[in-house]
Amino acid sequence: MAPQIIVEARNISKSFQRGLTVLDNLTFSLNRGEMVALIGASGSGKSTLIRTLAGLVAVDGRKDGSDGSVVVMGEAIQQGGQLRCDRNLRARIGVIFQQYNLVPRLSVLTNVCLGLLGRLPTVRGTFGRFSADDKRKVMQALGRVGIAEHALRRANELSGGQQQRAAIARSLVQGAELLIADEPIASLDPASARRVMELLADMNRNDGLTVFVSLHQVEYALKYCSRTIALRAGKIVYDGPSSALTPSFLSQIYGAESEELLLPSMEEQIGLPARNGHDRHPVPVWVAEQERRAKARAKKRIPKTQRLNA
Image (cartoon, helix red, strand yellow):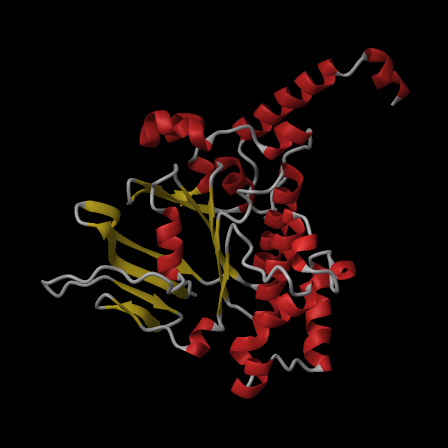
């Protein structure tokens, strides 16, 4: 059976100032059930592309009529330089941002309940009247992401990693079929980043959720995504298996900018072994070797007496 296309972008371009092109005639598609990484150095256009697919930024219209388009789940959300995303379609698209986008003074429970607004009757949604059944669903989602005990705390009392998990829980109760994440781990410590990526991989694997996530470090794409799209200066310079993204290949397509994408991985920083969110996608040998050397260096820094006592 041929894969079902859930997102199809054709000839999309975006300029915010005359002569400054952020996205340059991009064409690609995402299949239902995929977990795809979007990588690129700062200023490559990742956030603009994410917001374009989410229906938050309109693509450029063209005088010759060859306008770009974005079709999500069979419905055009971008056409002729205008946004067309209706309420029902928006309820099927979850969006996670680096800044979490929680209401600081509201409880975690209420923040996650807001994910239900797209599916509630207008009156109930306007006045925030959530039923007991709604709240049970929210508590189940909070339990799944591991923060159920914080349900009644204010959102601004949580750590960054906990707030991002609350945002993921909001997408769970929303019932999204497509999850678009704009650098969701950029502001997190390595352990929290790992937890967030494992949650996204679990939702992709067990719920069939299609995930499109922009990342600043290639190591996360290698571990959790079977496919990677690479941007440079608003153009797609690679679209294929993540396993091909070796340091030498990245250097070929990015030049000196590749160093920005190959910062020390999370396992190098906290001394954990390489693992993959999808068991069917083995971690490349060069990443495993990099982590083995990091563990050896960390071991040398531990006094011999301490190692023996351990």
